[in-house]
Length: 287
Image 1 (tube, rainbow, N blue to C red):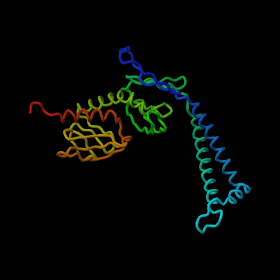
Image 2: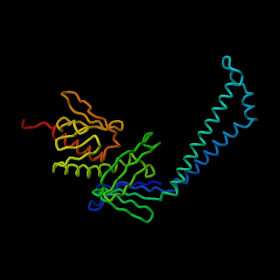
Image 3: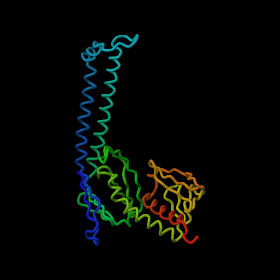
Image 4: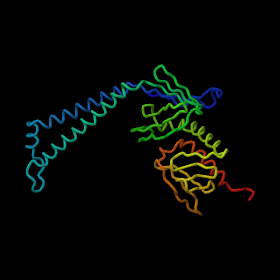
């Protein structure tokens, strides 16, 4: 069961403001095992029934469709074989899902997560772990989802928080609406990461956010050789890719496309790059 709580903007500004809350109950895996077992029984039952001689003979004797010069019963035989193949696939997939969720049921504990404007609290059983955003070392965003309207129909992937103490915390579909999580929480850790990146640049300390992408005081460097200055730089995330481009006269040319989920601290990187590029590209009122 997942619950959300968002307090008003003007309430208790001196206290941490709760912006996202979710409880992931491990009993959900037990329910998934039950559904998978039902799928196994259904697939196995159909596979067994379609293999009985009495059923096979009854289907072949139907002779519903005659196609060209094919012998009578050919279509029915094909449908019979196809039905058994589909039933076997359902059986195997359901068995795999049952095994995976059974392992998760025994390996995972019920946990509650609370994200505030200043950090987060992760509660596992009787253990409670509290972190401020400054304790986060790296955030990797790799959520994937399919929505119908505002309802998540299918979700997979995760948002991973690697902490300075070496611990890793992952927000997964078990913690609710991943798109809603990003909408509510992303700004806060992105602001922290962007500020931290900006501080490094101000003391001339370059850093990498991807093996092929480095951030320098003068702009971005691709593959350790191709540099794009802030004054012409354009970045955007499209279709799960980070497009690094530059202005060439009146046109914009893409210099690189990198998987967005491989970028360290993507939210902070975008905030830093967009703000810095805007500063360099802003018209000089005194020119």
